[in-house]
Every structure is written in C-alpha cells, then in structure tokens.
Image 1 (cartoon, helix red, strand yellow):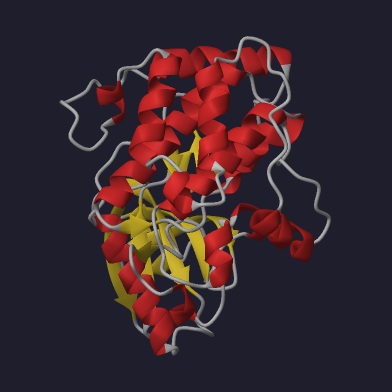
Image 2 (cartoon, rainbow, N blue to C red; image 1 turned 90 degrees about the vertical axis):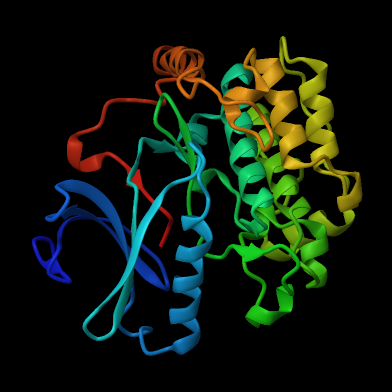
Length: 320
C-alpha cells in the first residue's frame, strides 16, 4: 500500500502514521463520509493467521463498545480483498505524553490534569470489563484540550488468563508485578501502570534504576519504588495516591475511578466532568481551559510543544 491508494474502494491513504509488528496505521480520507480517519491495517504477511484476525476483530469489538471522551473512538471494522482486515478509528491529534516528557518532569498541575483523564478512561474501560494492559506515555495523546488513551491492541477482558496469548504482552517498564506470574488479567494491573505514569510525569523518571529488561522485571516484583522527589506545591493526596497505585499487592491499590476522583479534585475539576461511572452528566469542555493554560506554560518555559511543520505533526490512533 502506498500514499494515494484507495483502500477497499473507500479510504484514500494520505500519511503513514506508524507501524509495528502486526499492523500499519494510516491517516486516510473516507471518500463516503468526507472525513479523515485513522486506518489500522493488519500486515499482509500476517493476514492469513486466523488467531491474529480474531485478535484484530476482538480489539475492534472491545473498543467500539467503549464510549468516553478520553478513549479513542472506533468507527468500523472491515476486510479488504485478500483478506486484509482493517479497523477504522478516530484520529487523535496532538503529541504523546512520551514526547512531552522528553524535557523532563511536567509541572505537577499538568501531570495531574493528564493522569486524571487517563484514570477516567481506564475507569470507563474497566466498567465494561476491558483491561488495557499497555498503559504508558506513548499511548496517551495530549491535544491541548483533551487527553485520549489509545492503542487497545493487546487489551483483554477482565478475568482472561494471561497465559492464553502464549507470551507476556505489554511494555516491561509498566508491567504490574502480578502479571509476571502469568495469571488472571485484572483492572488493578492498569492502575499500577497509571501509578508509574503519574510518578514519571512528576519525577521525570521511573521509581527505580534498571538498565535491562530483566532488571526492570525484578524491580516490579521485588523492589519498593523510591519515594517521589520533592515537588514544590504538590498536594500530599497526589503523592499518597501514587504510592497506593504502586502497591505490590493489587488488593491494596485503588480502583481507576477512585484515582480519577482524587486527581480531579486536586485539579479543581468535578468528578462528573470526567464521566466517571455513575456520575451525573458532565460538561465535556471543562478540562479544556486549565489544561490548555498549563500546556501553554510548557511552551513558554520548557519549549516542549514547539510548532512543527505539518508533515512532522503527530496523529496517532490505536497503535500499530
């Protein structure tokens, strides 16, 4: 496939946004509905693998039933002649949290505003029995006004056996210790990764020194995380929440909804704003002003959000 090709008689390929071992993600124009979408296309070399076809289809089904302002939308699933399966998704504009962190720790208010919305997205997924399994800075898109959690490509249903995939899926730096025992998938594993996300945003690094994957996995299982460094003005509730999320025992961690409520309160947002399960209808625009102001502060002080040529801007949907 090349730029300009027409996929399945409908989607005009524009820009290649990313690629991984399983799939390629394109920005494409839907010629029927007249809008840009993100098209995740399974690699032709893998399209004959029945299990991979099922995984792509299951991912589309899982995310399509999630309706939340902080979760990337899935619009459709199809199979071009071949068969060549693809998932049609919302394009999440902006920069990843990983890019924001290249200059070091974020101002604590920015860290709280971002992770509050990630926690809300996880709470919505967990309410529907979906565990993300790969929460990390590269899968958090910040558009300036609203945060989007992307890449449910290795998500699982709560209660699934982690051994069924044949290998341990996820990013080593963000794996919960209980997942190393290859047991049942639980939402608490996402909360552990959320704690690491919050720690890294506040400290600019992870809570232990590890130069290899093996050392990282040992740290998750046996080493207590280092205390957060002093952050001027950081409310004690945030540091306490971070410690709780990083508890080795999953039973000692808060739920994603509880974490979102704490972070929302600290950020000056009502929990209802984050569309938490059971909350009253909210004003979805409420997070826009405080997050935009803080991002502008990063622009001025840290120069993280430098303007890029159009070709260099990042637009990521559920990852490759």
